[in-house]
Image (cartoon, rainbow, N blue to C red; front, top):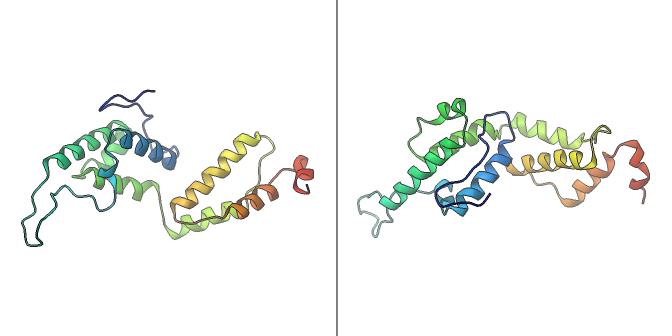
Length: 172
């Protein structure tokens, strides 16, 4: 799909899919449109103050970008999800609420993902590609929680998680 100014096509996030992958694709589309900075932590709708005691003044360009991102976000969400966040006044507010709801950084989630990594085993009924996709999603989910897994630890876990028919591969 070739992006056209002000428009792009994406699957709607409905709360059941892979939020991390949807988020990555959306951020890529917003960056192509020159709108990625709107969702960056610390972004503001105000003009830069020359002096600390100058009054805060809304920047019309930043406000226009924020409105555009809010509308694009709304078009990339199912009605059920949009209804949960449409009360937010800014695109960043909407984004933070989505992250809070669907990219949980709670202790139970961290423990669950670490356990999933530690006990990872490939399923014989799936292809290597399907198994690796699940493994890489797990690594990406851990990374989104600022949990870094070294390449060596990833390799060890993949090798130890291979099904029995691949056992000779582990010892080579």
